[in-house]
Each structure stands twice: as C-alpha cells, then as structure tokens.
Image (cartoon, rainbow, N blue to C red):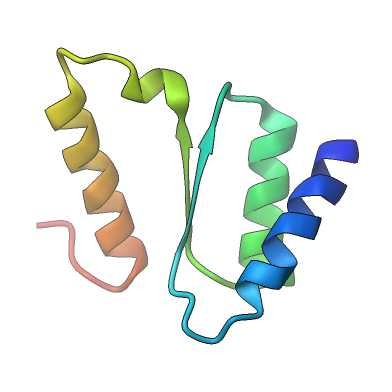
Length: 84
C-alpha cells in the first residue's frame, strides 16, 4: 500500500501531460507489489502503456543486446506496432 501511494504520487502528475505516450519504470528489484501498483495505475487509473524493467535484467552485459531488443519489441507492440 505504501509503495502504491508513492507510485501514484509520481505517476499522476506525469500521466496528466497529454503528450506522454509511454511510462518506462526501471525497478531496482522485482517486487510483485511494486509491479502490480505500476500496472494497475497505468492500465486502469491513468491509462497509458507501460514497461517495467528489472534493473538486474539490464546488468547482464553479455546479453544486453538481446535483452534490449526484446524490451524494445515489447514497447513497440504496446505502442501499436507489430512484433515482427
């Protein structure tokens, strides 16, 4: 509940801007409550496409190219593009 209030406080001012097309959140650790709060706010309370990324995922330097390509494909799809 506490993290939900903090996230809502951060996302509401940001999502009220009409030009905003996507929210990308990089989380220091993958906590279900944090992920759920971001998705709930971005999907229903302030509808805007969102991508949540675990910072640990980005720390694997040997696979960074593959990881970023997959993240970008997901973002492209969420913004109306196709996967391939």
